[in-house]
Image (cartoon, rainbow, N blue to C red; front, side):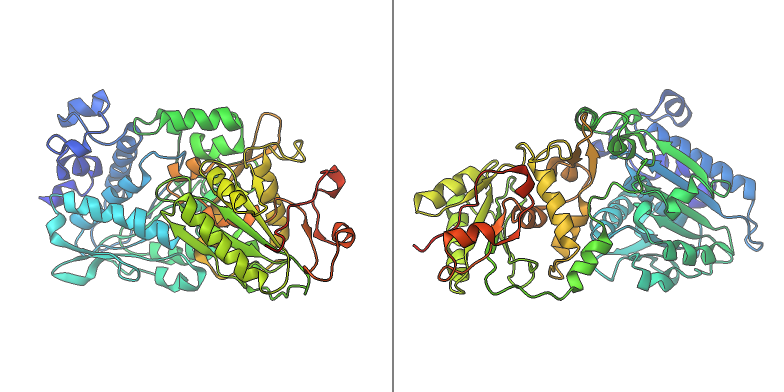
Length: 511
């Protein structure tokens, strides 16, 4: 039965899942032409139907006889956000695995969390719903993500592999000469060139297929080349999120209002077009990696700066980060899930009192937005001086930065070139996950936390806490041997000196 759908992927998708019975699948109404052809009301969005039909035609044209290798089917799809890329990845895996005995595939994504919690989770979900799903065993968990035919687990399988360059040999030839070797790349813009190069070796036998999906976040990548110098080898599509039924139109309208329809941010996140700049990533992974291994030492009299980012949403964490000059590594971050304002304030006091034992000044900066105001009020009520930081406030240099948050992130990015941070994957992901654009005045505007959540990323709580440590100039000196006159002259780093800020940061005195 499954073999009937060998060159009919759209028919497979509409047959293999219970679109008309399972109400949870009834999100998209099929375009009229497909509704009439397949006699069903619901199914994939129009772009997915078109792609699946085109893939079927490509299979028919190649007429693989089970022995003689044919040209690889290569499809690259760049798109805006939220069009259902993970779902079609799952459909393709189910179609290939169900219709081709001894098929062998590899699925990868830009990060391990994306691969495990989004891409592979979607494959597991749709396989359970698939009429042929009982043929396969699907396992999950780090290092154990695979889909195997129960009776032939070695020769008929699909594996999830992380895309680290040192893992590139896992993408070497799949050797399915009598079937279909296949690769699926999710968030393909961020997959290293080495992985692409090794995967080429898997396109030499059988009836190979290669699918690359992603937001076109970067130029100069292998994914970019699919649409440019290598476009003669790839079937390409660019999908505008506004044309899809399932996308969040309110979110799209907000992005267009914030950044402008012609901005790189909207090009990438809505229109499915590559940016004019080389990347929308505000802080590169290379900068973060270097800061993770750099050795620095704090000066004896440098002040401790404590950044506090209170959680705004229920699934966020409140984070306390400590920096002393170029060193933001030596003090472990404090992350509190579900802490109320009183608990968070108490933890700040405890941490500050511990730091003061070293004899250095301690400066506390708190994000005053949302519940942060309550934390600030509590700290002040018990006698602590606190700097309130308003991310949405006016930047000191409004010609360059759209708001205060963008400005202090800019200072943090500058500091990272010479600073030290721990090997903390949550911090690294936060730092590299934030994208940027420009507002109507051509000032740099960072992506909102809500926007990051909308595209499946966590709120960058750890990075915001570290960024808050750059919100005010920092004096150098111990409590005992540096007086006010010296304090005003000796500064570790004063990014605002030329702006005549007009006041010094509030410093915790002896209590």
